[in-house]
Length: 218
Image 1 (cartoon, rainbow, N blue to C red):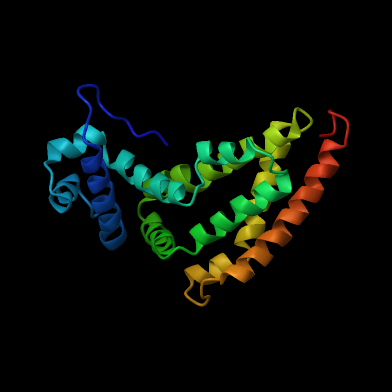
Image 2 (tube, helix red, strand yellow; image 1 turned 30 degrees about the vertical axis):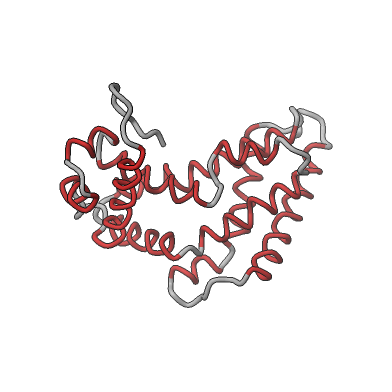
């Protein structure tokens, strides 16, 4: 997702985050379709012109809100790449990323947003597409890139994407569906760690297998 900012003098960072916070609250309470840029301006205490000076459209603002939530759990591209720049093995990296991923999945606002999207998607597929692009798709693409880097050329991009997808699916397991249905409480830290460790072990085994094969089979 790209937040487009118009050219000109530097905009106030404080106002940018005020707008983003106000918009996030409105999207959660009123949904995407019922939230207008006028409402965002009023809730953030700025003019409508100021809102548009930071975000060119409601679509861009909505995706920025989703991206901001992912970033708050260290699941954006640069933070993940930074995590791999040190001495972390793939297994340790997956555990680190996995814990943050699960915490994001059970974040109260994230769960609420999932429910909003599911409800609106019936009559507005556009909002579901925006959400998917800025959230799940972006996170998966980032993780795929990280896994590919660990392969050092021994893993195709397609295989790296497959491993990243499998990892995310293992992390979601059945608990995420149960969370969305309101029949699962957030996992405590000890259970998160154990759950993530199992998923990371499985992906690490597959990774080692694929990278030990000839390039044509990787």
